[in-house]
Length: 102
Image 1 (cartoon, one colour):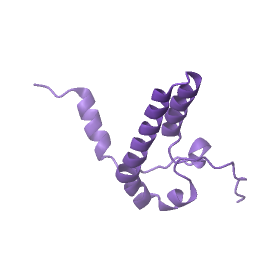
Image 2: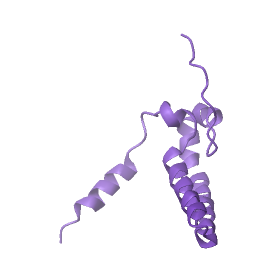
Image 3: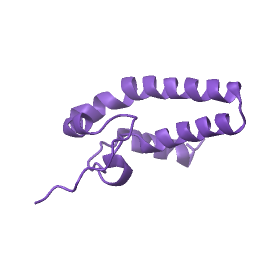
Image 4: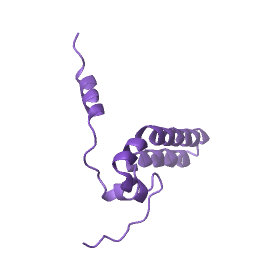
């Protein structure tokens, strides 16, 4: 029986270490802009539909993401890119900083 391509790709990607860190655009303001975007969409839907159930789901999803990110992803991120973790907030985006002069 052959292994599905997706399983091989996931295995290869899981064993690859990060070598480049994107620190411009939204990644300069928050460490997890894509995850933050999903949570904001869910909150927007909850407000648009005036739905307590959607609001509960959005908050539960955010809580689950926070636990997952803190326990699973951030130890490696801090080990490899500690300065980035100190300078960039996890969830709440910071305003633009002036560009550093060289």
